[in-house]
Amino acid sequence: MLAGRVLAELRGIVGPGGMLASPGDLLAYEYDAALERAMPDVVVLPTSTEQVAAVVRLANREGLPFVPRGAGTNLSGGSVPIKGGIVIALSRMNRILEIDIPNERAVVEPGVVNLDLSMALAPHGYYYAPDPASQKVSTIGGNVAENAGGPHCLRYGVTTNHVLGLEVVLPDGEVIETGGKAIDPPGYDLTGLFVGSEGTLGIVTKVIVRILPLPEAVKTLLAIFDTIEDASRSVSAIIAAGLVPATLEMMDKHMIAAVEASLRSGFPIDAEAVLIIELDGLRDELDRQANRIIAICQEHNVREVKAAASEAERNLLWAGRRGAFGAIARVSPSYLVLDGTVPRTSLPEALQRAAEIGRRHGFVVHNVFHAGDGNLHPLIPYDGRDPEQKKRAVQAGMEILETCAALGGTISGEHGIGLEKIKAMPLVFQPADLITMRQIKHTFDPDNLCNPGKVLPAADAAAKTNSAHG
Image (cartoon, rainbow, N blue to C red; front, top):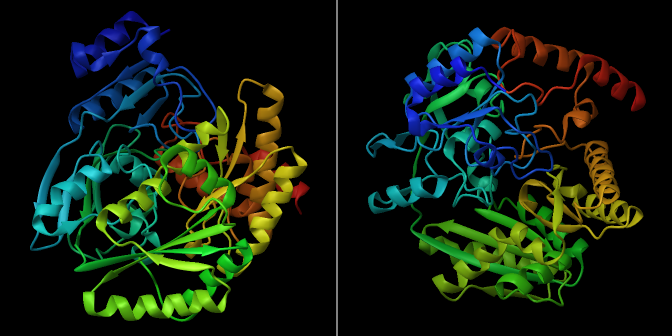
């Protein structure tokens, strides 16, 4: 419980309608889309950089932890206030400050919803490329914190490839600017350091992003396979042939069944796997590329390749892909979603091992993922009301991440580390790597008040994990 004078000062900074302190209000901020929960002491909803900085300075003076929060769609516990303190919810900082078409840039506040930016750009013939599945609700600030990806990251890259500059409130309340509209600024790449830092080094209050012209044409293919191995090998063969589609997504039979029961998007429930392959660019070029991809899939025993015949049919396929996580609600009341990455050629083995791990722990693993990047999203459905089931699901998840690391991959492609993957960090980082990261964190946040307890394992825990896997 915070002192009355602190609450009064916070209310004075953000205004009477900008603070939440009742137990009922705080419940909505104790969790994100991951597994863990923890109640904050207070939530503030600032509307300006100046208010954010003033709240942070107060937190420093009082020794209070503070956690930046966007829409709360992040999938690794990054916005859970495990130390209590102040949640700084940035949803009211949601203005598009500038659309600069001649320079192909936009300047936005962190609370701008990802899809809203592309909708605002569309009348100008432009869009914002990073497109996480949660883009209807996730915010640009949250995307920056997690370095979010999405289906189009195969061709266009993840968030860091589209962020050129930031305004950041540092953990002591100082406001700095990094990067800018120009490319390749001199000095250290502080913009790159903050993107993907999960709110542990500061609070982003303004973002300068790269915007792209809308493609002249789009062609969407649905490739249907009778084995997941053939689908996986088709992915590697397409990329090896020098073809880089805008998207190359895979769903297995378990996820297809869940999606069709929920959304009826037109996926064949008797298939073992499907690929959603989308091409974009010049209209005259798309048919040639599509024919080459179809031929490659045929070489790998594809049952059928269908082209979306209309925009409505294309949108229906994408509604199924983007709604896949939500469709799991028909399978189980809870699920753990993972985010490991492996080399594309290791996809068949990674998927086989994940299925075996799931069976050993009593679960059916569902898969929907960015196959072109080797970015797996195994989902483990379980009943969160049963502590034993949750324990087994977490253990299975850790074993799947160990498999990704053993196959030459890593433990996160876009969802971040947050709380859930801290114990997995030593799987891919040596002690010296983690020491360097802790030194960076200490330099920016010596009192460990800015989103504490996230990303980095404690030094003794890291040493034990490295020893166990040595």
